[in-house]
Image (cartoon, rainbow, N blue to C red; front, side):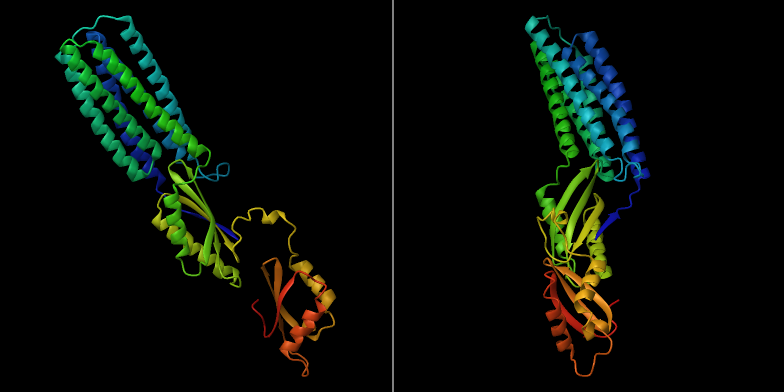
Length: 391
């Protein structure tokens, strides 16, 4: 049996908080970007202009984040039963692509300027002051965004925070170049712009790599999967766990697992054990949006295609074949219930009878049934009980 269990999330509050921090960051990116760009053009600093473009790329990605968190955190619907988390993944992939494109443009233009031997001028204290203000502002928005990202568990928002940190780090490089140019080493400005381009490109590549891994359903880290399995196997009634599979959907994770229980448990008891496993996992791993469990009466680890092989007959056919073989047996004539247990490619059968003839014992009735079922190779263990049965 399989069961889906969902973790209730206050998606509305998370989305609003993500939008708030992103919009604050967008305002800062706009102001800082304009300051850097205008000042860089006025003083002739390629590094400051490049850093301004980097800040404007932050503004573009802020738009990605707002749109992706809005649509990516909507509730599942009939067309998207697993939710919309992959929208965040696609947005992160696009964000990484934009960064690599921007990085290439910055690095190429600065390299041409360095090779061309263009004259460099001292930027002045005003340009250095702008760089300091930008550095403080970007570091603050990085810390604020990262704190919110971890609270709402958004990988996209966390990626945007690190994008802001890359802008802050690039501003540090630019600040050093401006100070160096002020003292006559103007070539450091163009070199710093190339370094900024490389840094931006590295961030873009990392975001694209992580998003691509998520799109192909890469599993969670092995250590985390090991902890999940150990926790599931600690639940009373669980004999073992196998075929544990994980994947990510945006900022949340999905888990599938097979739970082995005692083979003769009732369906309802086995199902409740599965529910207990699901509850414990979701309490311990708050990123789990969905847990799907499959109850097994025996360990069939690795036998993923067993359902494609010719199977054992189901109850309707079983009772028909048993009636043909046992119609003359008193125990079968007096049956009140029949339990079937599908184990180890056989069917164990428990026959519950009312009143047997005085000359026949339960052991004798079981022996008669066994002798009459030799032509049925799928019959496993046979037992005869006196009583109303479990039904």
